[in-house]
Image (tube, rainbow, N blue to C red; front, side, top):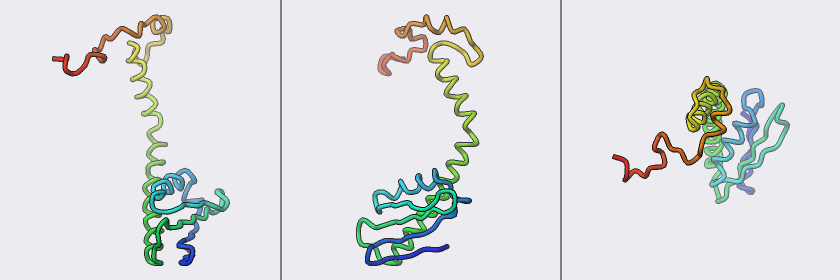
Length: 136
């Protein structure tokens, strides 16, 4: 793994292979570090991404290396999140569809649009609008 430390600039630069790390995951990992470091991204997202982490406060060379290691760990975390999100996309869409349809009194297989259009927003068949203190 290639990296460069510039102690005077309080910065570490390292390279990510775009074959293994997609840009969406890099953005997610970078977001986690915004409170501790300035994050700069450069390079060609199709070939290689260069990540610059510049400490907001003075960090030693070992601290900068540790920051890079934490970035890689967070990057793996986001890679897994993105992979799971893609795998579960259909089921999440189905769950949201069922929730929205049930909110207007329809079921997942129901396609009668006229009945849904005439539904009154003031009707509350599930008692959702009733405060908890009044429910018994």
